[in-house]
Length: 369
Image (cartoon, rainbow, N blue to C red; front, side, top):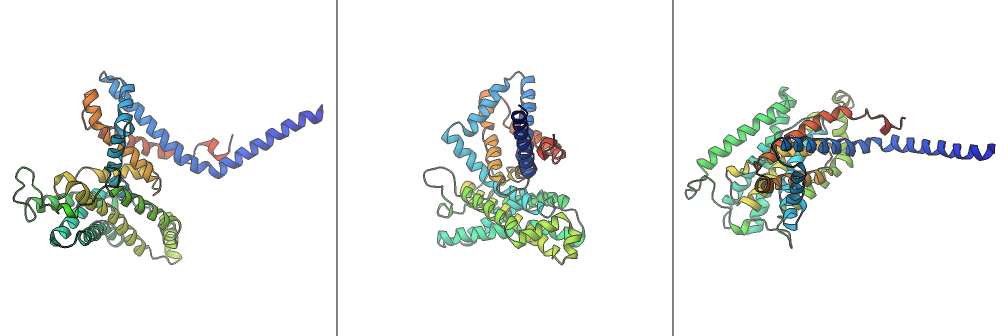
């Protein structure tokens, strides 16, 4: 009797120890999924409550959001098309975050990248399409990269807060775009909506075979994977994360913090600049005010919700792209303003920031009872 009783008790003790060990090893990874997921669910619940106050059924809201984002093949393609620039602009925030920097100027880099790409295309009219497209990619990446590198330089060499400088640079980029589109670069034929001349149908980037999704999605996926490899599987990325954890320690061991900051900021801006180039070459066909669609600002939310992980950015960008794609359906079926999705994004952002205090404080994920 004594032996029989001891064996089950012993088995329970071993199982508890195993569970505790599992949670100690993987608790942090579970947190990165559980906490943002809970923040997203909480934001949807609050948004549903707001909708209910105005006499709409929250269940109808959630159904149409799902249907408008993922319910049909057309919805999926619309979602993926919107996710492409979000992936790239999210990298503009996620990469500098490895150095402890908060860059929120992806919208400005996107606009400058679009202007640079358009300028390259217009300057090479008559050249082979592949040459024009390559030139547009290079110009977009360099333009966006230098724009965010300016924030990095101000931080490193003048002590200017990069969050403030990158945000202010967005408005400077918008002013530059408006000046050029309405002035030196304006197409005389664009009467009601000022824009540049078209880059030419032959120079446009096509769609992925069998879909209506442009190749910008592939650009975003490749950029995310490359960013992940750079940050987590190279000595450069390790140095960046060390500097992000403790700048003084990084300087003591001889790491070139200034070089790291400038390189990371250039790469981050290059991603957003590439998003601008894609919007011109795959969607708009020219540069105009429609490019200031808020992709850069939504990319900030994507990066924060993904915890600055380049690979996690992909599914989060698809989710946020789906929410954005459902705005039109919510307007038609529920009579909500198309901008309702922007309100939801704001609520999600508040919940994500508030949930940041929970990391490392959930006892059962540490293997504690």
